[in-house]
Amino acid sequence: NAGVTQTPKFRVLKTGQSMTLLCAQDMNHEYMYWYRQDPGMGLRLIHYSVGEGTTAKGEVPDGYNVSRLKKQNFLLGLESAAPSQTSVYFCASRQGAEAFFGQGTRLTVV
Amino acid sequence: KQEVTQIPAALSVPEGENLVLNCSFTDSAIYNLQWFRQDPGKGLTSLLLIQSSQREQTSGRLNASLDKSSGRSTLYIAASQPGDSATYLCAVTPITSGTYKYIFGTGTRLKVLA
Image 1: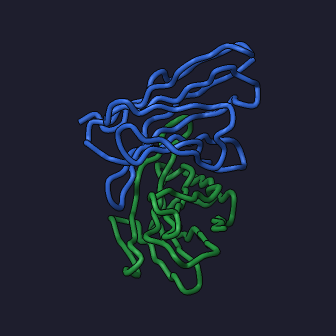
Image 2: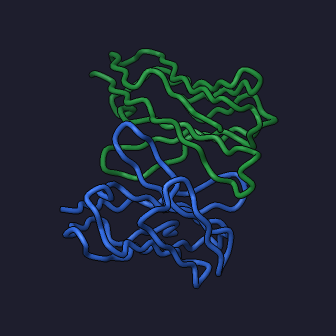
């Protein structure tokens, strides 16, 4: 049982480059989330989705876009990466009370 | 706006000690509270989930309590072991969120010394 899988696990980008982070869940959950984790700031919500075809902004959405074309996948895009987007990104899915998290993507923007 | 605070930010204890980690939140209107463990460079592992109607949950050496009226939760770890060394995060789901969004604390980094 895979749960929540994130790809890639590590990535280094140059300022201005673009990339897409993929989150896949095999639990048929409706809700999916993207968080970023920075030292001393905890996890902050970037975007979320309440079902296939839906997306909404979280606490820190600027500089990111998302898509949920299939229920099991939630994509996070960076159109023009900035050093301030250096962080660890976590995806989560949820159905009911409990959420399940992926292992994270460590992104460095130089 | 819901805020979640965890004190202390870091804790170092000798092996075998019983310890308590604290989590406080500003708005008692929550669906539930969840405790997670995060190992360095890893994702979050769920430890205990307490629904708003519950007072505590137990799993092995872990016991979590919830006092909604005072906006507090504690995670009790009995007979700590070096393998318990990790960062512990608490998160609440505000009722006002409507979409089951978590609000996280900044965590307590625990080190258990052998």
